[in-house]
Image (cartoon, rainbow, N blue to C red):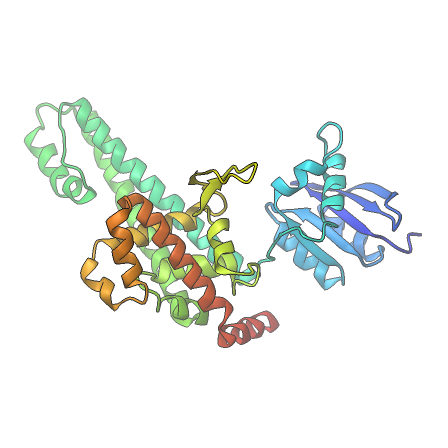
Length: 347
């Protein structure tokens, strides 16, 4: 019977979990392989301790389940556990590395997501996949037309408006089979438009009733899509100590390789959440297209000066970083949002 544990590491698989526990002196307490369905039954028999796991699919579910049992679960980014792997890679060594890494006092952990956050994140991922499929469908229509020697102006609206006119006017040049293929692709395009519109509408409805989203939409050029994506990713921003930490997590800061007191900065790191980074950079580009509105912004003077000395792409990244830092400050310092989050968790 195990009476005390220092930490437990879990390597989460699709059907099985490998767990490794350490005693207070750092020696092995156990090494087990369990089925997913026996997770609760296994941990109910263990003394309460720190439990580490890598950020992956179902990590948040496992974390919430163990927290209800009285454990202290902590989710770790996979890159932080690699230095602790001993020997060759296998599931037990991965679980042992997690159990050791979770004891590091200065390690940055992944914030546990609630079910509402996971649902909202799933909506964004579905929408992103649909948009990608729609772009691929449009490009395929263009490619097939180009194979017939027919070039269409750039832009989805140009293709949509001219497709049927092309099929009618070039009926002698396009075979009946290619005609049916193009019509089928166009129907796929329409179906994807409907799905994207339905998903976007659902996201907009959520943004109307979420306090955090309403606060974020007071920031210039942040609408329902960006606000809900931010809330789904960082909740109230408590995982970050300051706004610049969020900017670094999004990969909106220069990559650093410094040595000998000589700072060497390169291109942006592109670390962290690629989807959020893309949305914020797009919002920055839109804001840069309206210089007449800059004077009404709190950072308008900074933007005016920066536009004279920076390339537009570099300026867009800097502006996206500033929007991210403002968003963190709005979420982190709002007591009303904290109370709303606590109420939702209680429900």
